[in-house]
Length: 49
Image 1 (cartoon, rainbow, N blue to C red):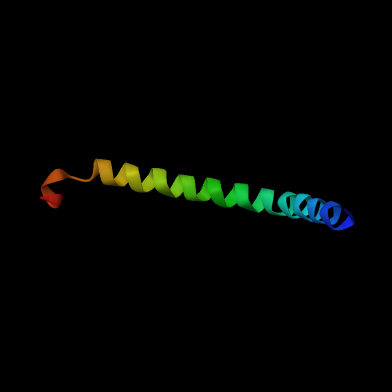
Image 2 (cartoon, rainbow, N blue to C red):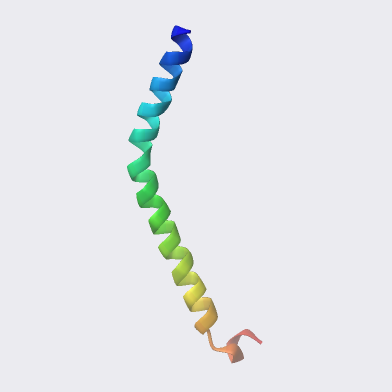
């Protein structure tokens, strides 16, 4: 029982510690994907074919 409580607390603390950097990285990744999509869509079609 004690082990389970400790694990829950540990998970909670870890998630809280990870959450902010994870959010930051997710937004960076999201921005990156959006930019690549933007460039891919707006790439001149003549260059691709």
